[in-house]
Image (cartoon, rainbow, N blue to C red; front, side):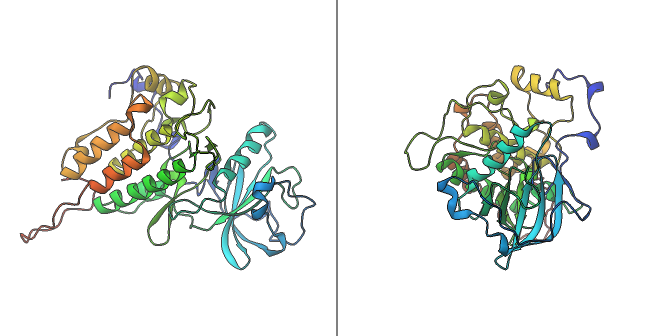
Length: 354
């Protein structure tokens, strides 16, 4: 890998920031089902939800909330499996962060960028409140559809067999389709990675955790969703586009870069970087450092097609990357190889190997 990072500065795999089995981001660690931190039922209605009028439709009816069990907790929030109006949901309580209260408030309001969005490959917000019973300092509570606790990260790096060709391409199409929908609505996710892609029943990928997202324009105003003067400093550095590292304006093409790293992970089952954070950031910007493209991308026609997609999506300049619509078209164009009728044994299930 052409990188100025000294080998002796590499971190062990267990210290890599990409190793993340969180059910959602922000950062969360898997819970050991410890009780506490949120009442088992919520029957007290807060005095005021303080949601703006455009979000009044999704105000939480607290009398219909029943919390069942914790799913995860961490720096910006705790997530619980719950029921709402009798339906199983995921409830996220955003924590008040004493060290960075502004960040925790921004995370809550950024999550609501996904409000009103309904798509099979995007986690749907059911209700929200800018308060939380029993915790007056919390920036808010969000109720989302329950898509299970399994993530694409866990599927890639867990004990299951490697992703097969068909699954890899299907998941990539799901994510690209979700991005196309978000970008049409003027929303940039800005923290796309396997840990923020949930694997829902039916083997569906759903993009979740919008705590770093930005709305680049209102969907109704007809403006250009591809560019804004907003700057962005959040997200996961291993998946962050170089223009964001340079402090340049946010565009939806930053998500395309993150998609490339995510697809690379699906194909290789490796971690993108295990080097010192500052060295990686410097090398990505100054030396066009990218995760290593190995033999796995050249063994089959499908692998070669994936290589072309990955390399175009993590191009250094945003304008050289495809749009989400173009990306989905390219993924749909990739065909599975014809079945082998010679009587030989089928390929092993490892991803895209010949």
